[in-house]
Length: 126
Image (cartoon, one colour):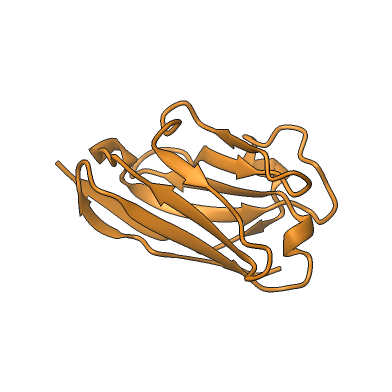
């Protein structure tokens, strides 16, 4: 599975951006997917997760109510809609996929994910 994240850019605080993760391979619809981010000088952190069996979702407290993760299995894409952006959302955003046919035990743990995209930079100005 190869992943490619896109859609990053510069936006003012309070604005919106829509990231997308495009996946190659035939197992996208059977893989748990997630978004992580890494701010300058900080460790990579969990943002959101979507399950592969029922599309159930999970969010970090910092983005809950502002970000929405979804998936389009027909197109093998995973959007992340980000609204009400704050300067502290500035980071490189990475999409990730778990092993096929596997429900992640701890979806917030980056070690549970097997495949990673290259990242897309989101900068939120104040």
